[in-house]
Length: 531
Image (tube, rainbow, N blue to C red):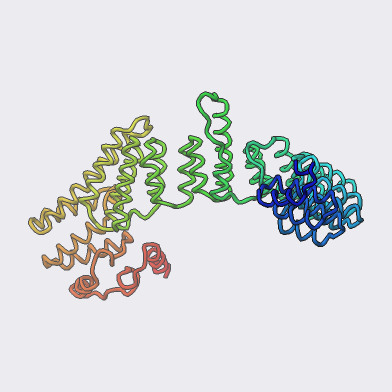
């Protein structure tokens, strides 16, 4: 109404008092149409209409003011208008930058391609929509700038096309291609196209990057091929890589075929780990595949006794018990230490749980011999041989069972007599002497006891009884039978016996002074006979 009346002053006063943004914009446009540019700017600024301020500045060819307004307001519309103005003025570089600030990358790309400003083109193509990225990728591909093309094809979702370029031009002379492809492959997951994963793996294999290829095969679920790459190209399988190479378990509803395939993959993985001397990992994978026997064999190679014992204990499998017991027998279970005692208990425990009567009988036999040889404990040896006989009696399918039991009975009888003789050494020395004397004539005496122990008891008995000549005769018998004297008779006792019969104690030949073994004594006596 005020406009029709021509009352402009009143109208302006009304608009300023109203402080309505839309009304203020209308009034600014009205002033602009009348050529009142300064009033229009003031009203546009009051209304916060930076686009119109930029437009007015461009109309006045005040591009610096327009640029400052865009920078201050960050108006996308203002940036776009300024870009169009700069393009019209031929200021292409700045026009590209303001098109980019407005978010209109298509125009920035259009100008960059038109004026072959490739640096700007790549910069803004990466931020553009996929269709523009692919279009720019084709542009760079046509110019032979393959690294840029691959990067844009990847960003645009055309992975197969990007890989195709990598495969065609990738090589040692294009290291950047490898870096780009590494970035592509690292971003792949189980949802990636199998064709994409396969192409990436093929590329890395071709150019000798076998571990990257193996990782990609894992991503694509091609576990057997990944394991083959590790085996053929000596890629060290770490614990982390071993877990990655392990196929996931599926629900029972998926059916057994995949389960069989998983087992086959695990077995091959375990074999490769074993060849790489990663015995702990091999044990783990054999176990997951259900082959506990080979799992323990790998653990045995690692020499981890503590884990061997634990594994056998939790497996509860006959073959595992026997393997573990056999391994423990190869260790130092004969030293008499606490650790050796624990090993002995475990060996007996595992053979017992396995119902392995024959090997357990053999172990008891060896244990008895150890007690005799190392500690002269014939009582423990006798108990061990009795246990051995019980196990032999329980054993089945033994070809020479009766013969072995008969031989064992003979040894038990001899040792029992010798134990009795030792018990009579103080209470009834004569009985002891009779028992030991009769033993010396037994043909299989040395299979049961150390004959030197029997001789030693008789020598000491006759010496104490004053029968020095009888004691001396026994010592000579020991020499004739090539028995080393010093393990059985003390040096002082030997000197007293020889002094008592008027003989000089030999310095050599009996081992009592120099500790020569049986073989050395035999050689010495042969030399004496030749002389």
